[in-house]
Length: 378
Image 1 (cartoon, rainbow, N blue to C red):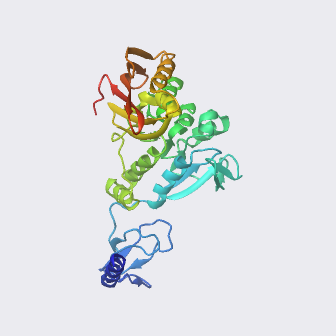
Image 2: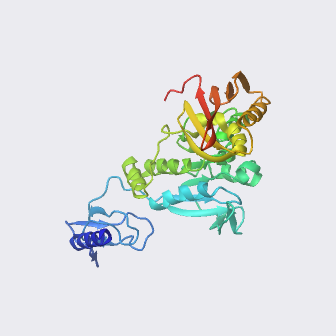
Image 3: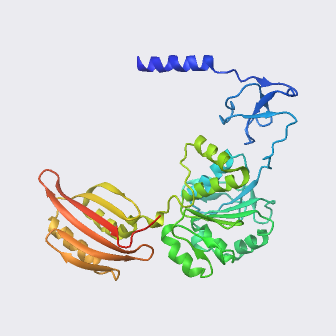
């Protein structure tokens, strides 16, 4: 019955919805007409008589009047996305999807015209090579692959330097920032990258102002973003620069994506960064990893432990491994509880507690807590 009710409701909605009639020939003057934002779909350049959604791409139609110039009218920027083997899939596809929905023109390019394997499974045929790429407004440099194994590749670095003046924005995702660094474009610029690579970015390019507390940085011509999904947020920021924040937010809503601004979230500041090594060891003894939550100042993990080894032995082995690390200091230790401090290069000192609780039915659980000593302030 519920399914039938939904179907009837949809039928009523469709029946009552305004009919989007395609206007043939020249659109009428002095009347409001509707068109799809230019996105490359089959209905680009066509007009409708009623408000609603484009039947091809489902984006909301924009109102307009013939002869009335839109004050915010801009060209469709052209994006060039660099492809190379083992580039991270999300670094490539995330910004590509945002720019596609925004109606930007998108082309891809690579070192050669051969098919490129992005990530481990996605094969893409580049549109151009470094030698024949036409002029673009924005260059997107993803991370992974060459960005980490050979960011100083002479051919790539020379290409970036040659394109710098004629390009509006050079935009890196994740470790793609290392391409910019090798080209000398991060000197005196704010920059960020994947959380675990921030110390390396700081060391390799000492003239850069490396940020570890943002999703992306904007230096007008050079934009860098942190890891993976951060490239999506930075791409919306680029759309906002061309079309305004309102339009960018509408596109994010259409994509059902919670757009985060530069200062809304920084992976490198979450307190679980204290627990990376501990998680790797705890997983050896866990039958279930059932809890992980926290924020920039506090994080907690919970595991159900195997019955194949006594809890006391598990804790002893874990502590033994921690005490091999120069950044760990044991403060107190009891039968099933250990407390200590861990020094992190980005977060500073953290207070760590590892506790095992025996449960009659579940066996035993391990609770690991980390708390930043010098609290992070937004």
